[in-house]
Length: 282
Ligand code: GLN
Image 1 (cartoon, helix red, strand yellow):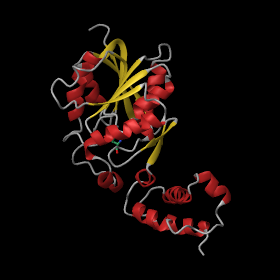
Image 2 (tube, helix red, strand yellow; image 1 turned 60 degrees about the vertical axis):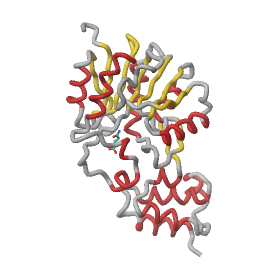
Image 3 (cartoon, protein in one colour; image 1 turned 45 degrees about the horizontal axis):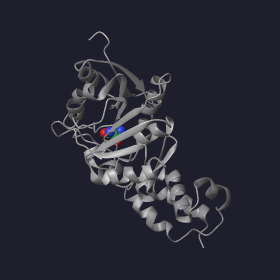
């Protein structure tokens, strides 16, 4: 028999070429096989026999499939969300948008929240968890993503507060039917340059429609930012995720639409969240 401790050691070596976190990945996949969490695995199961089902999960990870898709879930903010390859895996970088919202809205909690391109529902559902009296709408162009977002809303008990709707800012007049105005708009759009060299696990497995946005990665900002003045309440705030080098370009697009812009950095110190407020002088 192979004890779990040995299987994990071998697996970490096997995954070294496919993952930046091979040991952690091996532990998460092993815990998944056993139906327990990682701390229970580490605390009490290391001498047990490794389950046969581990090999198949290990092979998937070795082929660059992200752990979140293999186990079907990802933690984001205070939540655990279901994810499939129909949605981008929520990243901790995006929690910067929630931190920014909490700071910006400390004195006036938002009543109505909009999440553009909600995917798994991560940003909207995190915001609804933060503000229990708020109502929210998440829109997405992908029916499969909306299914996941609705499943997550239901699992969290947010069915009466989270409405996941079909919406696509590439279509003319997309924002006209929206029941605004909104106190808080969140958006993590596609913003990767078309020819960017992404990690294999992203490139091969995550939805390209949620990642790529033209030669300079700015196509989607150019399209949806001009609609924000129609959707945002007078004293509302829109918080947009950006790529680390896009602050100046996206700020200029927002300024041209009458917004004052500030930026918040993620934990790695990269520019990550732009906060747009109506320009009081304009
Ligand atoms: N930060 C993501 C990545 O680099 C991109 C997310 C996005 O385009 N919205 O993989």
